[in-house]
Length: 262
Ligand code: ADP
Image (cartoon, rainbow, N blue to C red; front, side, top):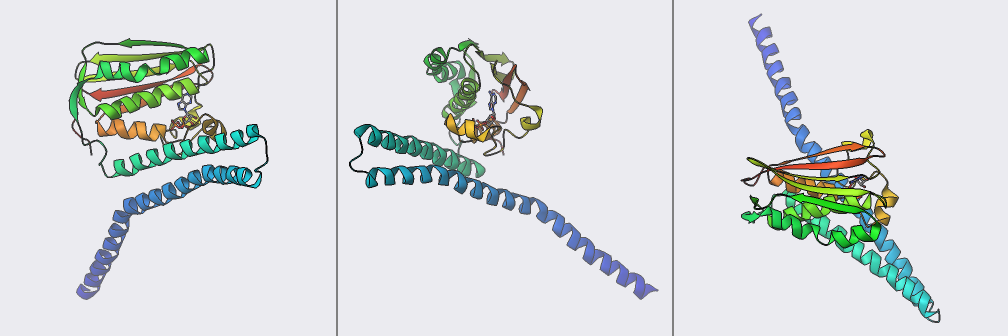
């Protein structure tokens, strides 16, 4: 009986450790799968502009006697797609570096209110052109310990989306508030909104509610993934509230003295 119970004990330990080892591998397998999906998606996304560039190049080369207007149109298509590829590669590089926490090394104390104003300024003429009211309420003298370039990039991503997904006649409000130990940034738009089924997925890399529309407006589907990365590296949170047909609000909360988050 002693030997049998000893053997059972040994078997239990053996299978138990196998089970534990397998469980310990689950996060590694998941992260490996995530990387594989990311590479597959990235290759697919890069293929589309490359195909358009190749087709238009062939048109130029095969039709030397075509009108200047046609040639110009083909060259313009090549220019649009190369710009898209450059943006895509920049975004991919950002995310690859961020995965290894290499992005946000330069943290310093800087006036966030001025940075937000600088990020906002280029959007004012764009909003006027699209017939959208763009308002802001920015608390003065608000400093934060963070990466200035990246926090400006965060504001740009949120404003860019708000403009893209709000039709003419709509409005956008950008707010910067002092909440004591935290700072709150919110971008509220009166645009098309996001259905609940999509809400939790929009921060995923390459996730787009309407792929064709996003592509048409120059989107890569990486904006919100980058925004979330920037916020996490500042130990902050980003939330989204949306009502389809009424609008969307992105709300970011950042500690004033964040250290690099892991
Ligand atoms: P994209 O380059 O497509 O804009 P993002 O990662 O920035 O990629 O956004 C992901 C998706 O989330 C968008 O394709 C869009 O469907 C949705 N989205 C983001 N911001 C808004 C917004 N302000 N209003 C409505 N939908 C939005």
